[in-house]
Image (cartoon, rainbow, N blue to C red; front, top):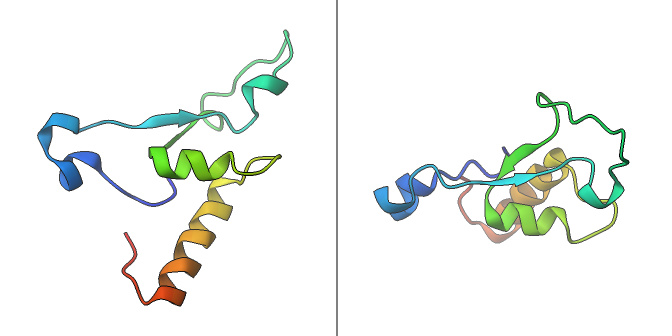
Length: 81
């Protein structure tokens, strides 16, 4: 949901469909009675974006990661996914 990578297209059919799941509300903060909303939490992220999300507390949001990704591409002259 952040960078737009598709592993099958990038790495081939052996990893097609691979994705990690990021909980918008960190699992460590879920109370016993917390009910996960499957439409808003969890969200699919590639492993890199998932790691970026957890580089701060509270985690970066998907919109934050998109912004970081775009800003980094613009400043480096690199391509965006």
